[in-house]
Length: 22
Length: 93
Image 1: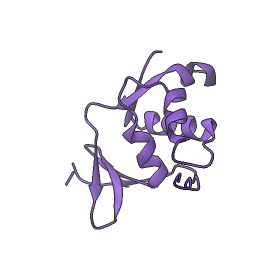
Image 2: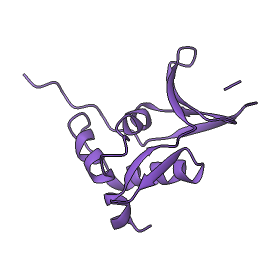
Image 3: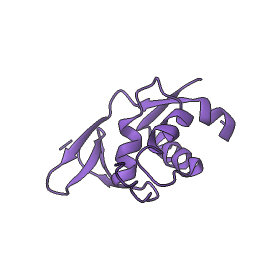
């Protein structure tokens, strides 16, 4: 039996400025 | 780059960027020298397919195996916005 497809969400991102921590 | 050009482009993460899973946020993140970019689930799935070999159109096709509908324009806009932040690069198709 096929697994149900997931509901698509609009791809998003949040940018967080950090000290060059990365 | 037009939408037609973009569909044939082959996106990949920029050299100085890496994808990682942030256990605290329970989200995938892009680690960039001066920023952390927190991704939602579909964003992480898109970037997981950006290997510099697949075209944007092929990435959309691959995502349709998992999601009920995948608007190509949303994928293109997402990648274009990340390219503007130098997190993603496009190789020509």
